[in-house]
Image (cartoon, rainbow, N blue to C red):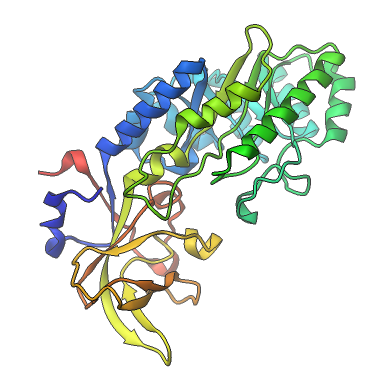
Length: 386
């Protein structure tokens, strides 16, 4: 993942720096596209994972669609080559302006998350003389067995339409004459590595479809969301997720109706492993019990460890030996939570060494901030190196 020609440049690198392996990205996209095509499934890339233009252009070139959660993401997707007919608009709090924009751009569909949202979409579509294609994002109340902050499919999250609201919609559907119900949408969380969770979701969707058919409603499309996890612990060995097994799980357990289309919204699984955050050691210091490697990257560059207590493999690229040397790796921001890892083996580590923080291609740069008035991390793509 770290090419030799980059290793040779380590002393001159300006850090912090996001490095993207564009060859690995393409290999990952090809693997996902091949696996989805085998079953006739459609992938919409979740822009929230990474919206760097070069990455978006690579993904749009595969013919995949886009999953957007803001009006600006819709604009960015269109500018990056995604076809409007393959863009879905998700999110629990779409503004009137964003809904209007999506209708004017004639996107594929809205993933609606409440009865009131459907009412608003219907009103705005009527004012524009349009008919909005909608999916109902239903809450299947399934535990994804992942971190609580990235679980979205249980009954007590803000996401999705509850069973009560679903029944109200079924009774009032004919009143929303400027919307067209074309599908059902589900998304239960992120970083899911247990395929039994997707099997459970499929079985629940089968029950829900039966209920809709009992009410005389035929569903054209199913959007099963995303959630496929990656291997954060062994990123250089397991660089490409098991897309075949992922899609095979749904193929085996979903009971599709004739002509029904199945969609997925993958983000992390497509882009996470192609990104590495490189950071220089500023200082080595000792506490009463711990040794600290203070680096020039911070939570403003990579928020996940502070926000989710997320694990990222960290390696000293200078490889000074003495693998028993253990450190807490911390950033310079004036927050106690600005820590990337605790008590990890880095080997002999000194001021000026370059650390690689792996699996940062998803939810890395996109979540950066200017807190402490810090400058943004630089960006380097493998296909732009000499």
